[in-house]
Length: 149
Image (cartoon, rainbow, N blue to C red):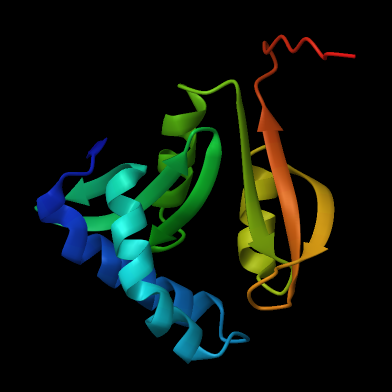
Protein backbone atom coordinates (compact mmCIF):
# COMPACT_ATOMS: atom_id res chain seq x y z
CA UNK A 1 0.00 0.00 0.00
CA UNK A 2 1.23 3.51 -0.86
CA UNK A 3 0.22 6.35 1.41
CA UNK A 4 1.42 9.75 2.54
CA UNK A 5 4.09 9.65 5.24
CA UNK A 6 3.19 10.69 8.77
CA UNK A 7 5.50 11.75 11.63
CA UNK A 8 5.45 8.27 13.16
CA UNK A 9 7.11 6.98 9.97
CA UNK A 10 10.14 9.26 10.27
CA UNK A 11 12.50 6.84 12.05
CA UNK A 12 11.81 4.05 9.54
CA UNK A 13 12.15 6.43 6.60
CA UNK A 14 15.44 7.83 7.89
CA UNK A 15 16.81 4.32 8.45
CA UNK A 16 15.96 3.48 4.82
CA UNK A 17 17.55 6.76 3.69
CA UNK A 18 20.81 6.13 5.53
CA UNK A 19 21.15 2.45 4.65
CA UNK A 20 20.14 3.11 1.03
CA UNK A 21 22.71 5.85 0.59
CA UNK A 22 25.50 3.85 2.22
CA UNK A 23 24.71 0.87 -0.03
CA UNK A 24 24.07 2.65 -3.35
CA UNK A 25 26.75 5.31 -3.00
CA UNK A 26 29.83 3.41 -1.83
CA UNK A 27 31.87 5.94 -3.83
CA UNK A 28 30.86 8.71 -1.37
CA UNK A 29 32.57 9.00 2.02
CA UNK A 30 30.10 7.51 4.58
CA UNK A 31 30.77 10.49 6.85
CA UNK A 32 28.87 12.63 4.31
CA UNK A 33 25.65 10.66 4.87
CA UNK A 34 25.96 10.59 8.66
CA UNK A 35 26.66 14.33 8.73
CA UNK A 36 23.59 15.08 6.60
CA UNK A 37 21.24 12.78 8.52
CA UNK A 38 19.84 15.47 10.90
CA UNK A 39 19.42 18.01 8.07
CA UNK A 40 17.63 15.53 5.81
CA UNK A 41 15.44 14.42 8.70
CA UNK A 42 14.13 17.99 9.02
CA UNK A 43 13.79 18.40 5.24
CA UNK A 44 11.78 15.20 4.93
CA UNK A 45 9.22 16.58 7.37
CA UNK A 46 8.79 19.57 5.03
CA UNK A 47 8.65 17.51 1.82
CA UNK A 48 5.85 15.55 0.19
CA UNK A 49 6.74 11.95 1.05
CA UNK A 50 4.93 8.73 0.17
CA UNK A 51 5.73 5.39 1.78
CA UNK A 52 5.24 1.87 0.50
CA UNK A 53 4.01 -0.19 3.43
CA UNK A 54 3.46 -3.92 3.60
CA UNK A 55 2.53 -5.90 6.74
CA UNK A 56 3.02 -2.82 8.96
CA UNK A 57 6.59 -2.34 7.64
CA UNK A 58 7.78 0.52 5.45
CA UNK A 59 9.71 -1.06 2.58
CA UNK A 60 10.33 2.11 0.54
CA UNK A 61 9.59 5.77 0.13
CA UNK A 62 9.75 8.59 -2.38
CA UNK A 63 10.21 12.24 -1.47
CA UNK A 64 9.20 15.24 -3.55
CA UNK A 65 9.72 18.96 -3.41
CA UNK A 66 7.23 20.35 -5.91
CA UNK A 67 8.03 18.40 -9.13
CA UNK A 68 11.53 17.37 -8.00
CA UNK A 69 12.17 13.83 -6.77
CA UNK A 70 14.50 14.44 -3.84
CA UNK A 71 14.88 10.75 -3.11
CA UNK A 72 13.65 7.23 -3.77
CA UNK A 73 14.69 4.44 -1.43
CA UNK A 74 13.70 0.79 -1.17
CA UNK A 75 14.86 -1.64 1.52
CA UNK A 76 17.76 -3.63 0.04
CA UNK A 77 16.03 -6.96 0.76
CA UNK A 78 13.03 -5.90 -1.31
CA UNK A 79 14.70 -4.26 -4.30
CA UNK A 80 13.84 -5.46 -7.82
CA UNK A 81 10.35 -6.46 -6.67
CA UNK A 82 8.45 -3.53 -8.19
CA UNK A 83 8.33 -1.25 -5.12
CA UNK A 84 10.42 1.57 -6.61
CA UNK A 85 8.50 1.33 -9.86
CA UNK A 86 5.18 1.48 -8.00
CA UNK A 87 6.28 4.59 -6.09
CA UNK A 88 7.44 6.37 -9.25
CA UNK A 89 4.30 5.46 -11.16
CA UNK A 90 2.18 6.67 -8.24
CA UNK A 91 3.66 10.17 -8.39
CA UNK A 92 3.70 10.20 -12.21
CA UNK A 93 -0.08 9.93 -12.04
CA UNK A 94 -0.21 13.21 -10.10
CA UNK A 95 2.44 15.24 -11.97
CA UNK A 96 2.83 16.24 -15.61
CA UNK A 97 6.61 16.64 -15.30
CA UNK A 98 9.25 15.46 -12.84
CA UNK A 99 12.97 16.08 -12.43
CA UNK A 100 15.71 14.47 -10.36
CA UNK A 101 19.47 14.14 -10.01
CA UNK A 102 21.38 10.86 -9.95
CA UNK A 103 25.10 10.26 -9.51
CA UNK A 104 26.71 9.03 -12.75
CA UNK A 105 28.44 6.26 -10.77
CA UNK A 106 25.06 4.94 -9.61
CA UNK A 107 24.45 3.10 -12.88
CA UNK A 108 21.71 0.93 -11.37
CA UNK A 109 19.61 3.95 -10.37
CA UNK A 110 20.28 5.68 -13.69
CA UNK A 111 19.05 2.64 -15.64
CA UNK A 112 16.03 2.33 -13.34
CA UNK A 113 14.95 5.91 -14.06
CA UNK A 114 15.48 5.40 -17.79
CA UNK A 115 13.11 2.42 -17.64
CA UNK A 116 10.54 4.68 -15.94
CA UNK A 117 10.63 7.11 -18.88
CA UNK A 118 13.16 9.64 -17.58
CA UNK A 119 15.84 11.11 -19.85
CA UNK A 120 19.18 12.62 -18.93
CA UNK A 121 19.14 16.26 -19.98
CA UNK A 122 22.31 17.60 -18.39
CA UNK A 123 25.41 16.58 -16.48
CA UNK A 124 27.10 18.61 -13.77
CA UNK A 125 29.34 18.25 -10.76
CA UNK A 126 27.42 17.92 -7.52
CA UNK A 127 28.56 20.94 -5.46
CA UNK A 128 28.72 19.02 -2.16
CA UNK A 129 30.55 15.87 -3.30
CA UNK A 130 32.24 17.15 -6.47
CA UNK A 131 31.01 14.00 -8.25
CA UNK A 132 29.43 13.86 -11.70
CA UNK A 133 25.64 13.70 -11.65
CA UNK A 134 22.94 13.63 -14.29
CA UNK A 135 19.88 15.84 -14.28
CA UNK A 136 16.97 13.77 -15.52
CA UNK A 137 13.43 14.68 -16.44
CA UNK A 138 10.16 13.02 -17.28
CA UNK A 139 7.09 14.55 -18.92
CA UNK A 140 3.74 12.95 -19.45
CA UNK A 141 2.87 12.45 -23.09
CA UNK A 142 -0.21 14.62 -22.60
CA UNK A 143 1.59 17.54 -20.97
CA UNK A 144 1.16 20.98 -22.50
CA UNK A 145 4.01 23.41 -21.89
CA UNK A 146 3.98 27.03 -22.95
CA UNK A 147 7.44 28.55 -23.09
CA UNK A 148 7.91 32.23 -22.40
CA UNK A 149 10.13 34.37 -24.61
